[in-house]
Image (cartoon, rainbow, N blue to C red; front, side, top):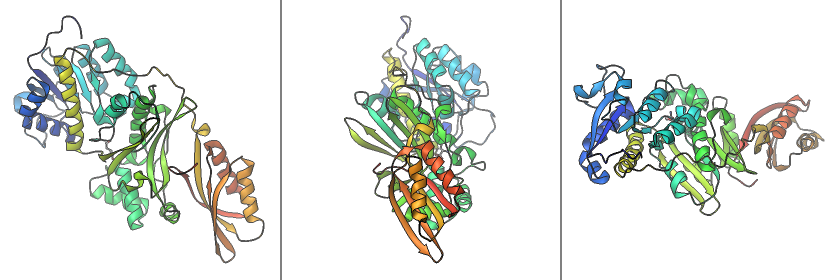
Length: 435
Ligand code: HSE
């Protein structure tokens, strides 16, 4: 904080956006004003709420004199100490946050897309302004995961983060697993129940999870990782056959955000994967989220809870708000960005993965040997093979040991061209077991 900063007698808060999260932030700020004052050490006062339309229907009653359509004017008001940004998207959110910091406000945001795309610009602006920029709500809604990575595990070495960080896709995959439904049918049900948007692309194609993976990897590995560094595959190609194949192996399919430290490089990817039903992440059902963290000293930790929704996300926003308000009163700020390690990002082809491959093949001598040779030719070691005869053909299910993703995908490409292979019916990466 600058020399000239005075200890404020109250903390004045501006909220940008009054949708499902913003309205719950406003509700909590109002309903819990007494507790917040006691916890912060000074009154926390809502001084403005920026909205797109003054007459829109809202989940919460906002006094008319607090509503404004002039967000840019609100964040530059001299009497605003803290700005909560819950508009989402890149612009105007980025300009508003930068302007708020520049005008001396501390910022709490839930904006994963912006942080994943342009986090460094925001962190540098916060550093320059000597203000806080907190964003617990940007990843996995109500689940405290960023603060544990940033603070609780600051003395440890995190080696791996495996997350189910998108509730929509977890709901769809869980529905496919429990009912045998195909992807489209499960998506339709998710839309009917309000778990999926009318345009589900950001969720089902993994963009939302990739943004969260970038944020998790940056914090876990003290290095800058943006959404562009994240390998991404969604779940729209996952079939009922893949789910059944996973079930036969005692596994379940999840969309995972995987952040790993490999030879001091960072590997970050989002894709569907089979994990054993015995893995703690397999028990994460419906639209819940969970983040599984492996670190050298602590071992394995799992953080679980609601990853979306107005009220859960507002809980995380308010937690940040209390911390930032306390810092403001103490004329200090929390830890800023930690990117000292400056690690390279490992390309997906060089990342070590395991594959599950199901094939329909001719059932005659030499077929198994030929399939095994296709793996061996790429230097891929086979962990298990299961064969089921079906008259003149057979189904072969091969699970590999870990190899580079490039070697595994080249193996599958080769299998697809072989005469003895009638069809490659399922290809999926495998996580959470022995390599
Ligand atoms: N759409 C996200 C999900 C929530 O389904 O988890 C917001 O990130």
